[in-house]
Amino acid sequence: MEDSTTENLLPPLASLLTNRHLLAAIDKLAYQEATPVQNAAIPLALTGKDLLVSAQTGSGKTAAFLLPCLEKLLQDSGKKYGIQMLILAPTRELAQQIAAVCSQLIAETDLEVGMITGSEDFKKQQSLLRRTPAVLVATPGRLLEHLNQDVANFDELKFLILDEADRMLDMGFSPDVLEIAEHCNLQRQTLLFSATLTAGVLRVAKDLLRNPETVEIHHFRTNQHTNIQQQIIPCDDTEHKKKLLLWLLNHEKYKKALVFTNTKVQAEALSEKLRGGKLRINVLHGDMDQSERNRVMALYRKGAINVLIATDLAARGLDIDEIQLVINFDMARNANSYVHRIGRTGRAEAQGLAISLINSNEWNLMVGIERYLNQRLERRIVEELEGSYKGPKKLKASGKAALAKKKVEAKKAETKKVKVRLRDKKNIGKRRIPTNKAAPVSETEQNQNSEA
Image 1 (cartoon, helix red, strand yellow):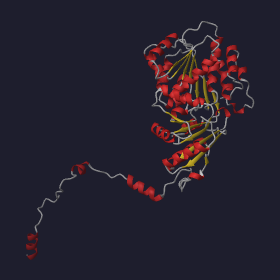
Image 2 (spheres, rainbow, N blue to C red; image 1 turned 90 degrees about the vertical axis):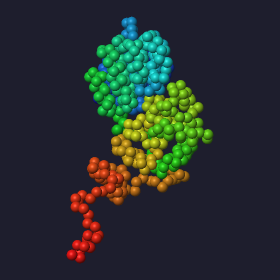
Image 3 (cartoon, rainbow, N blue to C red; image 1 turned 90 degrees about the horizontal axis):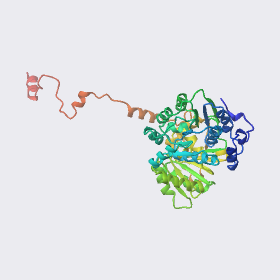
Image 4 (tube, one colour; image 1 turned 180 degrees about the vertical axis):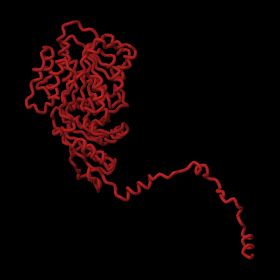
């Protein structure tokens, strides 16, 4: 297993390559020193080995898989038939970014890159596939639709690359990815890149990779994100969160800010509330059509929008420069999502600030994330908007909130199950009939018996 954390000096990226067209391209793009993942992965990929690579977002993974595969393609002097390289990505935005970088790298060559994603014209995509571009970037769902119609052909494929594999599995693409792989040339080289090596990723890797080399750079459970300042601010309720969010956006220093919510409804609601001031705000979520998402991202990239409110759709694969502030309006649902959210800032060793607004219902979730990351998040109070909630009054040894004894007992009493028999249900609302067969004794008879 490779881990470049022991490397003190990293070589120039150009020293890892030989093709003059690629060298000219990386010089034009001002790629200079290789990043740790590039330094570890590129030489191994050039040997033809399958790779299982884990590295945090913003670490240069795109160039780490594009450059060695393009170098090998350009070294092949023979006639190239069919699609040579297939890159699968979880989202349309990430696919667009990969295709854009690839286009820049092969601008002076005879190679062509094509892209297949959802929400685009199906017939135009069929025409693209029939032209068999050397490099194809695709999202799994739409590509599988074309495969099922026998339009795409990967018999000549030399490289299969899975980018952000953990995100693809989170989105439920595992069956699609495995089915696509079955259509690919068995003699291919497979490279799997992921921010985290989850159990699901390792299962897919076992199915797709042959004796892979593992490259693990800055594993998220041990990397402390020293260039990202991570804070939590306790909040009373949603309204208190909204006031704090507005205060932070007006008082923190940043070129671009990214605000995360857990739902589309919340993202839209915040966008409506915050618009109209000095802030240039827009929203991004899965219900927007592709053209609108592209428009918003273009405005955000060039700075016409400086605050983007988004769901976790934006937590992965969006390589946006100058995001200096990330705010979790809703705490991420798990540690993986949290890491990918805050990874939008502090990219390429730049400094970033990540703030999570935490109410009483989110405290235990936050502590669980701290324990999983083996890291304590900085506690912060905004004096101008200080609330009554400062955290649980009583804590367990784990740091989670401890319920009061009376509340625990009351909760147990509420949840205590009472056995209801079927015959009792049938008798509900019916007059109860005495079980004694003897007729009831009247008052007159009782008096006569006592006189006797």
